Amino acid sequence: MKTALITGASSGIGLELAHIFAAHKTNLVLVARNQTQLQLLAQELEHKYGVQVLVCVKDLSKTNQVNELITELKNTPISYLINNAGFGEFGAFNETPWQKNEDQIAVNVTALTHLTHALLPNMVAQKFGKILNVASVAGFLPGPNMAVYYATKAYVLHFSEAIAYELKNTGVTVTALCPGPTSSAFMERSGMGASKLIKGRTLPTAKSVATYGYAAMQKGKAVAIPGLGNYLMSILPGISPRQLTNTVVGMLQAKPKN
Image (cartoon, rainbow, N blue to C red; front, side):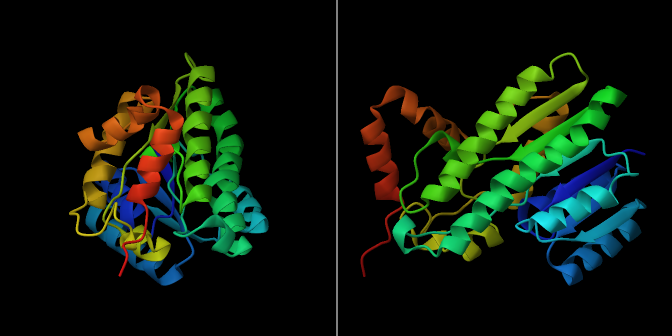
């Protein structure tokens, strides 16, 4: 049986991907900060699907803990790498505590890049591997009131596309999954639910996004954008002046006036 490593596996898209992989008889390494949730999920997946699940409780904003994870996986061949962990902070850049910005970059960019760099050589040697990097439709756009988050997702998108090209004919594929706003704990944690973009909307479920992403990864699709609305947002910068794009996103992400 092959093994999938999933970061941010305790909730949302990561949790749903864990269920999908387990249903396809893939062993799992689940990474997140919440030990209780991870252990409960591991027990559920092992009982329901008969797969082996390794729990790794790590805070990926901490360099030493990313290094620990890589060391612990040294003797565990990983066939699927799911870089799902990530978070955002809603609010003006100058009003956001620096630690929040630094941690976003550490999790969304640095940890993702480090894990990919560490696990990729073995995939290439085996001539098989699939990497799913959870980016966002935000990666195509500037993001007033979430400037750092949008910038990190632009990195994930462009990084994924570049190495996907480099890995042609190696048996390894890289997919950037670019969902729009999704019903998950991310909305609560980021505070984004207060924005005009989200308030009052019925959002796609984490399960539907995970299902779409899994299928796109298996096909080796380089960029996967679920939903027509998200696709239209992704092409907005190419069909309108940059200032207009920035203004539109800024208006959508403004906090409603009381």
